[in-house]
Image 1 (cartoon, rainbow, N blue to C red):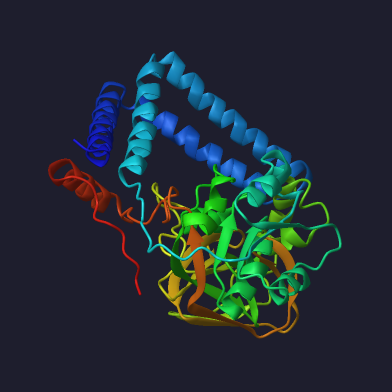
Image 2 (image 1 turned 180 degrees about the horizontal axis):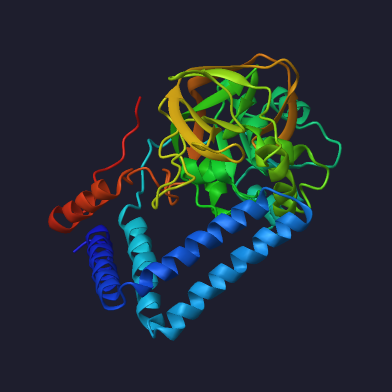
Length: 429
């Protein structure tokens, strides 16, 4: 019995156990369970009310949310169902964790010739000093890779082009996703192999490429005995990005001076400006499949993100589909209401996308603050980048094989139990 089959069986057993326990608890404690549910719903509504406001109104909303949540906990304890509820939660999270293990993939890409003069650019401050902590420069030299350290004030693009002029035939970057985009742009322009070293804070690009984010040093083996694949790049007004461009809420937060030091606080302080009762939507107009619209937040990504799913949410299953992913958060007036707004999300894919505005547009490009002149023209560049990946790394996104719908996941997991694990992942082109 292989690993995929075992994990699939565990996921299905725990999922069934969670459902059975939930049904039994609901029957035994009816209708008191509805009171607990009502408290949780009210807690969420009160917290959302507070987040959208400032000052006393914010604290009032957040305090009310905390009281409703505490009330739900007290009711659960008083009714004597704490153990059952804890078991249900553990079964749900256990089922999801086992399902992720069942859907894990290891893609083997064609072996590539070892480069003659690979170069690693690294930011010693990125990711809380990962490059220094893992002795990345020394490890690179051991593998025949020349390390070049970035210093404050350096122009990364100039350094990379100088290295290429001096004979570099492969480019690696250890730093944040904004820096990865610069090196990837030049590698694609010159058709040189590129390696993503996960020494940044989040390393979203590395995750979706299939680089093990916990193995910073091992990622250097991409230029030793790694395989090669081609992935897409995207651009807006000629500027390359590897992950996404955000407009609206997140973009406004990124522009603020204190964002780097206190990201969550800055985001919370930005919410009332964008989503509050007196907020005005950004001056952004585009054409969606339903027509011309506007929004409070737009995310345009290099291939589509999976959003709102229990499995793989926040990742891109593939980076070689030759499409942009567009995710829009737009306000909709509540029926019969004179104040307040609800938010609706739209998602679609397209090879190109254009946004109009009457003013310059604040943007977050791969997490970096930027100002863009309208119109904003996005396009995908299919298969533009040659990526090398270490043979012992996954080589594919963690969501590459995860179905989008829950019922599809159950079907596939059942198939794993009956017939074994997934087929080998193959490139689109």
